[in-house]
Image 1: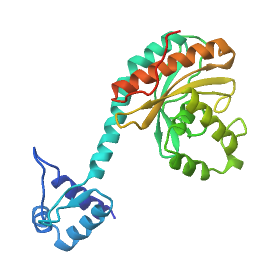
Image 2: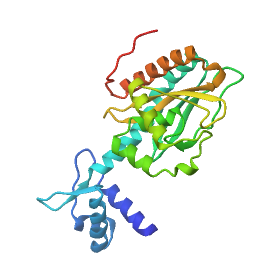
Image 3: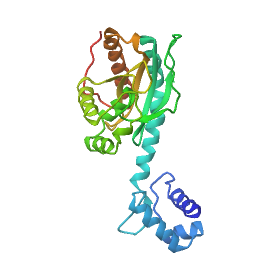
Image 4: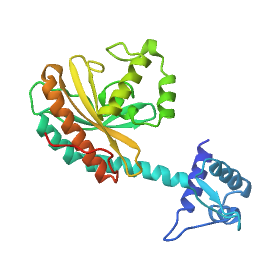
Length: 259
């Protein structure tokens, strides 16, 4: 298996364009990499099936496919998300005096990838890399809410609701109602689901292709999140999430009014 993976990587690497689009035949790849023609042909067929290489129908030569570009853009989005978000997260923390998290999606989970700690002595401090299902917590649920409907339904259909890792009992009906509210108001608010006595407010971050790629979340002890503060904090969370999205190339469909 390791040998096949090594050969696959070598084939992809040799097809990387050097200043202009590059196409090679099976024979040329075989000769350049000193691999049997049959092995090269078999690997190219598998790569072609998943879009990692494409064959020119006119000359039967191969080039890199769109799947390579897709995964490249996903990596670029992830790197850009952190660098673009950092100053806005710092401003949001200054506005609210609470901890601010940056989260992104990985399959059916949300993952914290960056954090600005609250300056207050009593604060929320979750570890970077914390993973939870997309339906638990404001930072995750707001990502779930803005996924395409088919993706949301697939994720929720795969949940064993009898063993959900939440401090509060959750049901699919409840989550679907929450999603409707989130999509109407543009942010999510949750309390005591992942951590006891904690409230979080999350807003979605979108990329240049109008897809949700993450969220920013303001979190702290629930007793500080009064109805007045929730109104104020949710405004700022939405505001900075929108500013991050704009820097990533997204054109937001809603406008904010200063409070």
